[in-house]
Length: 223
Image (cartoon, rainbow, N blue to C red; front, side, top):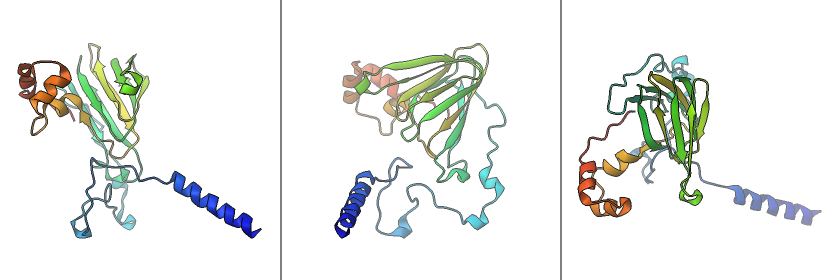
């Protein structure tokens, strides 16, 4: 009986070790420090004393009205991530409102820490995502109308384009309190300091004049 118990404990410990993992990252990086007084995050946010919480901590009102889409992209994304909505802390969810002018674009981008589900409320959107190199960079694309829903897997490049002649509105739901955002063109051509021109000419098979032109552009952020 004792031998059986010892085997059981050993298997339980082995199983525990096999399934152990680090917590998911909640920001781009988290540099370790020895002095806790120098820390600003604990892989996320510090928590308010629950006794001091109010209903306002769990309410977000910035989705009420249409946003200004008179910009180079013709779109505006209003986020309710943990930075804007503190009540989301530790809950693993976030949300965004997407307003589009006619032919407005939410350009190709990535959420490195969250899957996105998009629901169209008004208008007609062309949406899509591209798979990884492992799946041959396959494009999955669909035209959505009012009431339709589409999901963009975590970490994959995706986009939304209003192909209608009227304004469009959608809401996005994300599986992280801080899903992050990497807009492809802004990151590649608008980084500070800029990426070495030789890297980009080889990567995109174009000459340096085009890369210099693209790096000189004012890459707009619609968030």
